[in-house]
Image (cartoon, rainbow, N blue to C red; front, side):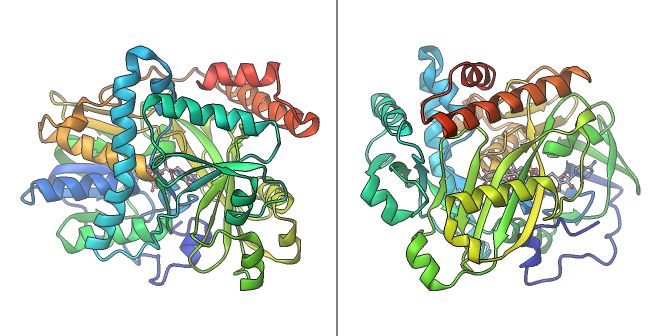
Length: 455
Ligand SMILES: Cc1cc2nc3c(=O)[nH]c(=O)nc-3n(C[C@H](O)[C@H](O)[C@H](O)COP(=O)(O)OP(=O)(O)OC[C@H]3O[C@@H](n4cnc5c(N)ncnc54)[C@H](O)[C@@H]3O)c2cc1C
């Protein structure tokens, strides 16, 4: 299995398939499990900081097969859990430092990609959270006020009144939007594939088609043999449960996407997004969209969880998830009823039990990990990779003082409780969104239940 089913993989210029995996190294200094952004950025920074390290990145399928090669391409200057830190007086200071570090990470990714010659269609056009219902206007304005109180300026967040917001994006309903410049649209697969190619050119062993079965201090056991390594770093996100002994560590939640055919300029004149702004709205079942560099609309939404943390390697356009996302897209932009949706896919993202990322390293065992981005890992994985590299090299830096470091979560519940919990949460979110859409006012009970768990 090498194609992940996404439009992004379909549009890669170079063939994504690898004829045969390279030989497995017998011993390395650092073995990284997982060839997505987390694994590859970690290899990148370790190689930069200490070029003499022998590093191998071991990937079960092909580089970018997972979420990194399928996502919505929102390279966003925030991360899941930052809001919760900002909300509490005792964690506000750390939350602000983390928020600023995330904002800077968007530029870091743009600059490093450029310096490595990776054309990942990076365009920092910002992000619009559109009030698609009138009652969301005061809610988003209150959020803006809260952000101002925290010290974020007009360079970070502004309110766009309806007229201005509609010029940015003409949706079926647009009552105004909260805008932040701290977000770039990217072609996610070009970034992840470019990183792998750049690392291979620098002498990092990028070994595809090699599934790791088990990690022990000093040893990685794969389906092709063993690799000895002083340092072993797990970067397997939503797939973590496939490793021996890790079944309860990360919850794989699915997100689904679709992409339209390239749309004519007359359509874009109506829709807008002339600066390739990314966009969504405040609903709980998160939606996200971007105008691609080749003028398609790529759009996604969170979907759900499969019993037993089952991983579906690919999802097809005809499957219920992408079909539901396509219907939402057409509701938001009725003009798209006249145009084809050519691609539909989905994939697992990773959620830690405490709903925030964790970056950990145990110098005694030499084992570390990073992930649990709750579907917001395009930029966060870069910051996490820098933290992990600093921890491995025993560098006490500003970022190793940030909240994610060694912030371990307990394991998820066993089945069927995990399934019941995940499905209940999904039900609350869907019910709250549906009630709000129907009644045009904030949902009560379902929303409170959902917010209480997720926040
Ligand atoms: C549909 C979708 C849309 C998303 N949209 C956005 C977005 O717009 N913005 C945003 O910020 N985030 C988004 N996300 C989340 C984001 O893509 C992820 O947080 C991020 O890519 C995580 O990177 P990663 O390297 O940690 O994990 P992954 O990219 O999932 O990489 C893990 C890799 O490990 C490999 N692997 C697994 N098990 C093994 C094993 N046993 N041995 C060897 N290799 C193994 C997998 O094949 C995979 O390639 C989205 C996710 C999905 C699924």
